[in-house]
Length: 280
Length: 123
Image 1: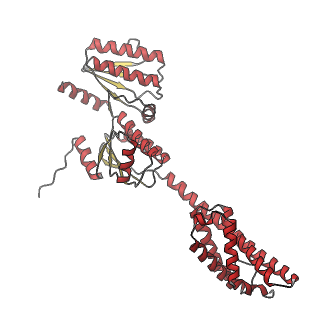
Image 2: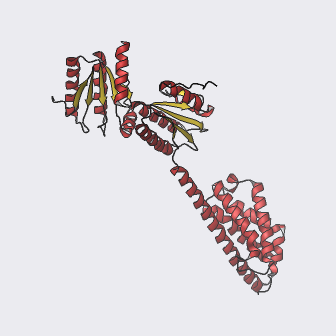
Image 3: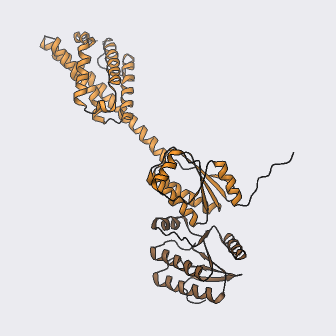
């Protein structure tokens, strides 16, 4: 086992924390556009505390050992939040890299013996590099996970409900963009042919907002359904979606009804069906 | 059968059923139009069903021709229904801005004939 680093005690000083934050502020220009000062304060303080705790064990080499578990957990949290907040890989790496710089500066100020200084800076540098790599790895991992989730959301097809003979319904949900809308159009028109649907109910209850391009696409889908001899009824339009349609100045050629059940009632009328209460 | 740009025109009851062929070039489209309108006059039917199920590509000329046929038929007192439009063709027509405002799109031949019978009853 190596001897304990004498410089470790200087790391507890406020000087290191101030220096570090200053470096972050200087290096990653966008940091404070993307996160709050308080968040950075908390992250840096927690990191330094756990760092001092971990090297207190005398292990400066192997970050996979249990004494580093808490520190790695903080780094995972930092990486994950950076991904969500839209940081670039460089900006994320700057977090740990600048810590190394801060540590070096503190050591230079406090350790007078040049030989000792050189060896301690080297040991610390190697250790922090490992942590830096770890941060980067988790950053990439988190990002890949999110990308995969997004791709899955795109693949997710719209469920179709066969409500009655010649009557189908599509309860749309999630985020509707032009790509998903194009997919939906295809699915809906195919379903019309396959099920000989005279009425299609498109339920937008679970759609909170829609951009204008998507709205245009929806109207094209409805018009295409009309050309195929099927009537599209839209139900459950939210105030936001209603406003977009109005702002578009679009002539929505579909019947719009308040909720799904009114859509079904209307469809039954078109199909010449009647719901009769069973007399008791 | 007369030359109608490769299309078939059948008569049933009081109606004509016209089915243009899949790849109709411009000249064939014109022949189809002329022949169809001539038959409408000759047979004195009250309704026309255009079965577009065999068309897999539509261009603006084709789209306009269908609209013109429908318009002319309307002026001759004939109701027009279209059936069998394929999903991709329907989307293309919408994207090209062909609205076919004066025809009645219906899901299948049964519904089209039922619709035309009701129209006749109403007139």
